Amino acid sequence: MKHWPLAIKIWFVFAALLLFLFLMVALALPSLLKSFFTEQTYAMIRDAQQQLNVVSEIFDQERGHIRFREEEGGVEIALSLPTDPEETNGDSGEQSIGKFESTGYVGGPAIGHLFMVEGKSFFLNQDRSLPESLTKRLEQEAAAQVKEVETNAIQVEGQTLFYSISKTLNGGSDVLISYAWAEYRNEMVGTMFRHLLLLLIALLLISSIPCIWLARYLSHPLTRMERQVNRMSEGNWHESFELGRRDEIGKLSRAFDEMRQRLLRQDETQQVLLQNISHELKTPVMIIRTYAQSIIDDIYPRGSLKGSVDTILQETDRLMERVYELLSLSRLQYVSAREAPHQWFNVDDVVRDTVERLRLRRPEIHWVVNPPSWRMRGNVDQWKIVFENLLDNQIRYARQQIAITAPVADAGERVIEIRNDGPQLDSALLKSLFEPYRMGAKGQFGLGLSIVRQLLSSYGTQIEVSNEQNGVIFRLVLPEEEIA
Image (cartoon, rainbow, N blue to C red; front, side, top):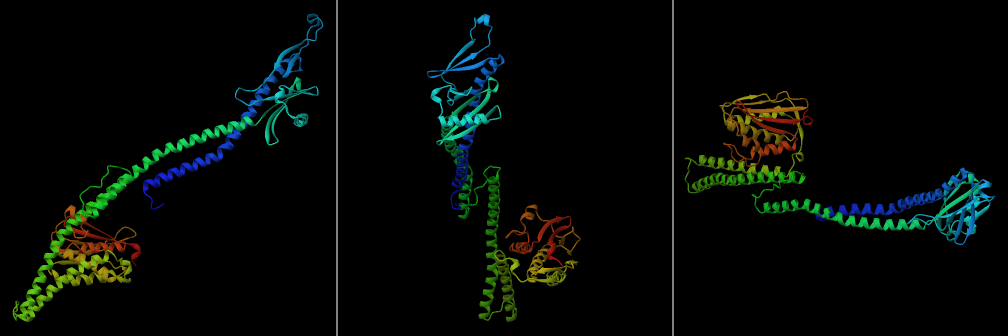
């Protein structure tokens, strides 16, 4: 999956999430629907039973009784009321309220009723009667029932029967059992489940449209940036990465554009530097060749063989110094300072030794040397390179004085400051002074300070440069764990 395009990954994640939700719903939904429609079935049974109980309660208050007469296709219910003999001429006062052919809800379950009156059982609808064995079982359960109304379910030959037993007829002397089979519930569960599954499938298909759009929306700018990076690799530095977005992709595009601009500046500087290097190296090579050819011809440009050979050696040293700087920078880009052998050494000794070796380059410079008394763990030769390059830069620009001090800093920090009273740096140069091939007014190759930053970064040391009223200051901030 890690090799798939980003758009496919995003769509796959969304599709997998929706499919997971779909499966969870598909597994949980039948049980939820079954529970819901079971409760609905019980409610319909109780409502249908309540309709008959209400009639019973009204006439019970009048001290009447319900009478049942079996008729073809059903049971006729008659209500027997106490009447005045003079008004009825001795009749019993029995009044029929009609024959019930069916009970139940339109579109709901078919509900049957079983009356047990004066020891006899009557089905309100013969077409919904129950087997004799089941009828006897319900009669036994009704006889043992303590509460007025109870609901329950029973399995009969693989089918479920829901029923409610009510002992409220005729003041509790008679029993009404209302019941319904589970076909209605099962049918409703199946229908609802099929409809909801179709709805979920439709939602899955519809939701894939915004998923695909989002995948394209996120991957398109990355694809565009990829094309621009490929153009950069071919030397086309001038097309901007800016996408006009404020999200994470927009931040990434701005970071790429800043990198492009730095690389563009570095490329331009490097082109100028290569021209300077070619000129700088060409001159000593031509001098060496000319002097060597003259010596072969017994001609001594410096008046003597020794003077001419000394000139050749000086130009050779100049070439070696430049080549060494180039090789040092290249090596530092691939080899960490942590790979060099480390030892504890006195910073004071390294600083003073470096000052003594460089002092004679400009004897008129006044030096203020108050280096720190710390002991530091690291590679001595690498730290010598750091101080050599920094002090060489100070000697090149200082007017009268160079100062090396170690002021008291915040807790946990150790600072070394190197000042010179030379001209202040341009604000543009301050930001890029430590980049490779960046040179000041009197710079040579623009590699010395870049080497310094490479070495200090490997030791976790920060270097800062800023202008002061009377010159320029370099600050080295060392981590506490590197000091003893």
